[in-house]
Amino acid sequence: MKILRRADYRATRWKNGRGVSHQIAAYPATAGHDGIDWQVSRPEIAQDGPFSHFPGLDRQLTLVDGAGLVLRLRGAADGVDLERRIDAPLEPFAFRGEWDVECRLLDGPVQVFNVMTRRGRAGARIEIVAAGAASPLAKPAGETLLVYVARGPIEAWGRWGKATLAADDSILVDDRGATEIAAASAGDALARLALVRLHEAAGS
Image (cartoon, rainbow, N blue to C red):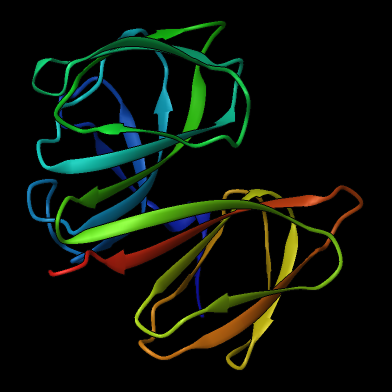
């Protein structure tokens, strides 16, 4: 159980240079955008404008904080031409990295949670769960589990020990075997977690 603190996330410029993202975890860890199998990050969107292009990557974007945004998505090869309003917190929205995406903010900057996976090599399933009393979080063999604290604080523990995490901290469980950790709210409010279950794509 690796505890990843918000203060230690690596800040990087977007691929198109128009914003800043805070990388939580990636595989391979030192790979650039063109070499990753997967990446989990927490971007800040401060102005209207285009998203970066990521050919071959599938993206899942979740609003964490702020009034929301509207995405205009176009993908000629896939017959896509649509507009999507994202103003409900913690509801993942999936799209392809090669699509043309224009972003319009509804009312000021937003913070989002971003998961990218290399098509044909890796996949990701996001679950949004509430953590009140102690809740077990199981990780099957062969899967990597990243737990992002969207609303905190929480207490988390497993066979490695126990830790307290604030909102925007994360836990990475990446041993190959099956294991289980547990999490519970450490404050008066109900904690909310984004569980990212990363796996190899079939046939890769």
